[in-house]
Image (cartoon, rainbow, N blue to C red; front, top):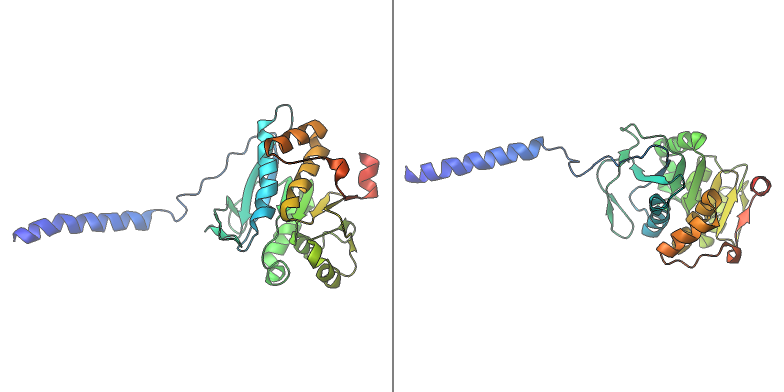
Length: 249
């Protein structure tokens, strides 16, 4: 009888704890990011297999704009097709801010498509993802990709009228898969129309800094580079700019 008196409170405690766990939302760790009015909304499309550098390099650059005065800074957030953590190619777990299949995603001014492990094959068969990219790109001011993210933009028929590039060793595959595209080789990034495609890797920093210099000027871009200890000099970088962009600079 004494044993029963001891066990009963314990059993009740465990039952209540289990009930609370069942009631707790799966995404209790997820919080909607603060979006400051008057800034650019920058949405990063992520998925399992995303490569760390192509995500974190532009994310770092764009996120640091909020520490600069006198500019239209950037709100940055990640979008995926699920609520659970996305696992990068290198094993990093990233919690998406929005699920584009279920959530009301804020209007995106700058779409960023980092490279992912299956951007040359199965990801291109994801019709819901491709359709979402097309929809966002239609109203976005800028659409950017890093490394094989260009394959996603090409699959979405966004690069048919502009020049583009991708990861150097995948240029041949890119040309074969999309033979009608104007593909530039031996450059770190291409800016044509509202599209910026980059070779990726660590050079994703340069492509992001280029957009910042285009938007904010050389001084701000240099300040961002200094803050991240990046050797930045646009004049020493090999890149391609389309004729329409050159005429409007």
